[in-house]
Length: 338
Image (cartoon, rainbow, N blue to C red; front, top):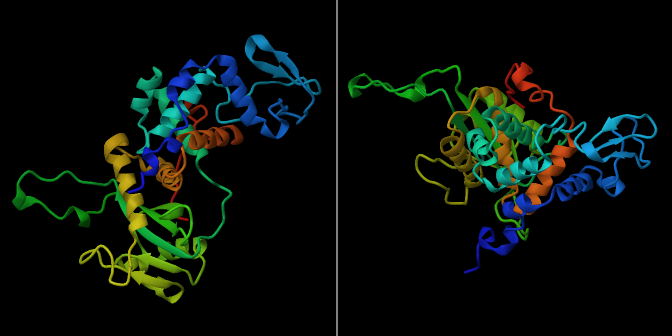
């Protein structure tokens, strides 16, 4: 039997010990190479775009543009802008986040980095924000799956069994469902299972919202696998639907199943119960997208994943929701629907 990828040496290309032993100059060069990769790691002024070699303020690890005299650093204009911690701490945070395959709580991150809980909470959410792909409008095609996992809104049971009610029928204002769309790999691909995942947060599995999500993100005529929930009934008109009744079986006689979406649900539950415990509806979409990213990169080495996350953090602009969070700059409404 072949060795599982995660047990092989190819999956371990990142060492937290090596990062901790790196000198600050080497860490700074890593940030430079990724931030300004288009200019061979040489600084580019974020204010005027000048590529001429700027003045180096070595004592502060900053640069001053020769054209507009703007002072900037390797993190200016990124998610790590106005950072107060050493660059090594941010690199370690990304490495720890990468190796935590079932997500990472802010409390654990604060212990690992020896920083305040508030600092770790904002830092972890900035990393999650970097995983959001706002520009990917590519439609899923081929064989796809859909399923939902309910989050929050549980009511504490009454002590005596005679007075208890079915909690599934209780309407709760904080109850949400995370809908996952997953595209299966083609036969012959290097990856087995799903290759692309998209997630959406709804207040319930209803026909209208499900129809909008599927029509906007899955090519019409594709083969779509779903369970017996009646919210998917209207999709038969536009898609080659394959349904499995989970009250009877895990997969149908002709191979009908949504096991890839169920795999997403399982990892999401492990994050919810094993790490974060409580997920606020306000930021549920970020948590859901994080698990989608982890599922889609499950066959990449931890070094490649960490490099990708750092690239995303240095390519994304200053956070509108987490920069100055504890000073009152907070998200005011949750992200629902497609």
